[in-house]
Image (cartoon, rainbow, N blue to C red; front, side, top):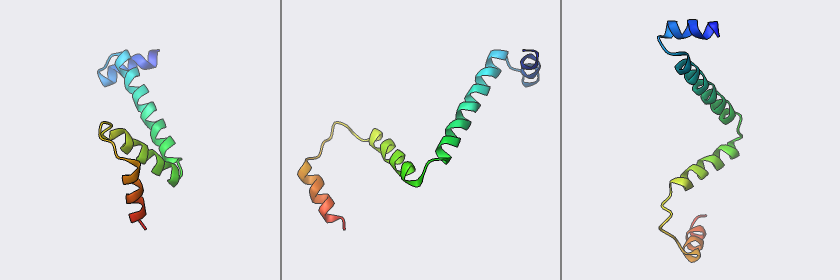
Amino acid sequence: MTKLKVLSAFEDMTVKGLMERAICFFVEHKEKERLSNLTEEEKEDLGLLLLMQQADRIETVSEEEVMKELRGIK
């Protein structure tokens, strides 16, 4: 606890603020570490998932239109 108080004084922050900052840094570090350990396929899947989450969910496409587009890709 003493170290936290000294660090917070040096950083001109409250102990609570310093702890919140440290936790945010730790979480970001772990997220980056986890992403770097993904395979290329997993990275592609994650990218596709993120794109799908941004898609307009109101607009729909029929199965026929999807199949037509897939046949056009070769």
